[in-house]
Each structure stands twice: as C-alpha cells, then as structure tokens.
Length: 247
Ligand SMILES: Nc1nc2c(c(=O)[nH]1)N[C@H]1C(S)=C(S)[C@@H](COP(=O)(O)O)O[C@H]1N2
Ligand SMILES: [Mo]
Image 1: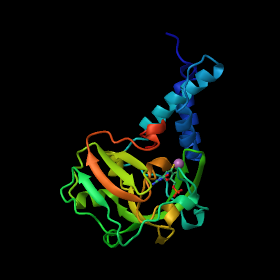
Image 2: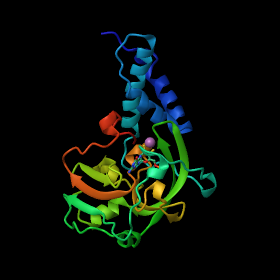
Image 3: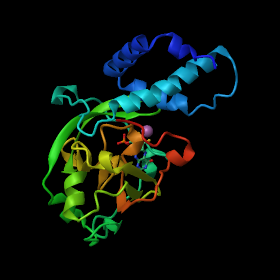
Image 4: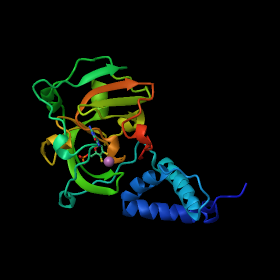
C-alpha cells in the first residue's frame, strides 16, 4: 500500500509543525478535532491533507496524554473577555434554584448522599487561570475556583479504578471523562468564575473545569455525577465530536 503524503513529509518535520502550532495557539487542537469530524470520502487533494490531520490529531492526543502533564496557566493580567457557549442562546441558560439544588451521586460511589450548594461551597478551594478552548475556534483565558474532582471523588468513596465519570446537567446536557482525566490535578469541581459565584450563563451552581480538554468536555450546571465502567458518551460526542478531545 502507498504511504500517505503525511509520511512522505517526514515524521520529524510534522512533529515540529505540531509542536509549534500547539504551543503557539491552543486553537489548533480545536481546529484539528473539528477537521477529524469531517467525512473523508473522496480522492481530492484535500483528502490527503485531512487524512494527515486526522492522524495528526490522534498523534497529538497520544503525545499529550500524560496524567501528570499540566495545562498552561496564566497570570491575572492575561485574563481575557469570557464568552458564553451552549446549545441555546445565553438567555436560555437554566436558572437553578440554590435552595432546592442537590448534586445527585450514583454508580460506583460509597457515599451517595446528595450535596447542597452550601456543602459544595464549604469544600477546600483552589483557583486556576487557564485557557478555555471551544471547538468552534475561539478561546479565552479565565479564572475558575473550586475543589479538585480528585479530592471530591476520594471524599465520597468513588471507585477510582472504574473507567468513567459521567455528568448530567440541568439543561439536559451530559458528558463524561475517562478516570485519569477526572483525577488530573487541574480538573476542578468549580463553583466560582472570576472570583465570583458562578454566573447563571457560566454554569451556576457548579460546573466542571477541565483545562486539559476542549470546552465541551467541561459540563456546566451539573446536577448529577456517576462513576461507571459503561461508556457514558456525551451531548456533543453523540453528534460526532471526538470523545477524548484533549490531553
Ligand atoms: N450544561 C452545559 N454545559 C456545557 C455546554 C452546554 O451547552 N450545556 N456547552 C459546552 C461547550 S461547547 C463549551 S465551549 C463550554 C462553554 O462554557 P462557557 O459558557 O463558560 O464559555 O461549556 C460546555 N459545557
Ligand atoms: Mo464548545
């Protein structure tokens, strides 16, 4: 079989381009994931490019995958204008009542008692300033505060040898993470944005923040969390996006 063009370009050269693009601009990861969603069926020259891109995406992900590798962090002065995204207009973001809100736990978790907003706020918190990258091709740098998902999972006695952590949201959105990503030190159960209680549009009362992955992997308005060995998929994954989508 003939080698694809990407191989002819030489692995080293490709690796350098990969590295440069990724380091220069987190958007390349989103752009790549988007490209790989394309149905490559014809033999146009673009086919070779897309094929290379698709291999490239997998390779970037494999290269990036390291449970100890940290997403870049930034300083307060680098914080930029936030941007809303959802599968609806911003004014349709769900209004969760903090008085009746409960985070429901299920699956491979010992202590399944639901959590109130106040209980979530009482958890030890840490802040991080990271870049949020949407697959649509935009990003911003923001500050999120909360407790590491790892500590939360340990506290409720989750089986951290299980494969997945799944999330259900107040707006019907849903998503999931592989356990190593869930246990990554920067994966936060976030209750604040920009030092304030999470605004409605940005996920009140609790959202995940997963800076090692594309934005759609960070569910907002989380109302249920479960640990499972059965692949839970996600809203955008069911519409063709790559599940791993990050490092
Ligand atoms: N509940 C819920 N979570 C969601 C979404 C959504 O539509 N509903 N959109 C995802 C996508 S595609 C992105 S880019 C981010 C947007 O988060 P932001 O509004 O804080 O920028 O949330 C993700 N989490
Ligand atoms: Mo997104």
